[in-house]
Image (tube, rainbow, N blue to C red):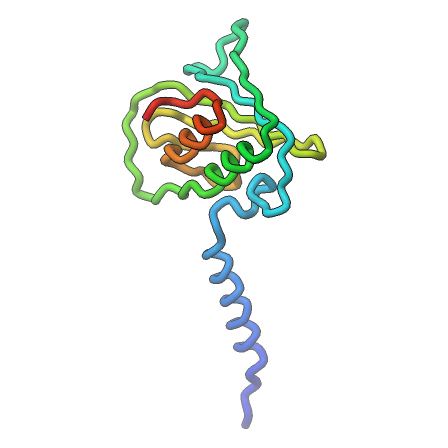
Length: 148
């Protein structure tokens, strides 16, 4: 009696596709990190201190429309690593920066980047950490960034 090989083959192909997806660059599902992303403006607010923001206080904002600089900031954010499951961070508090990216269609993507502890970056499809390359890209663009 012959056993059909179709079912095991389909399962193997499906598992291969899932496994290959795991090697994708972190943040590849975020519109900000897509190869077709076309920036128009970057608005940075900060430094902000917890609680964020304080009621009744205005935040300082810095803007740039330099597309090349924005693309470097986007690349730095999208290339940040995901934290390992056993990451240990200090319990300190400090400043954070809010980044609002606006594309040529008027769509926005908001990120929050902490300049303390593990330097988590929130707002992409997954949490990232160790924002030092992001600070370098912001400083190179002439935007406020924490000193290293």
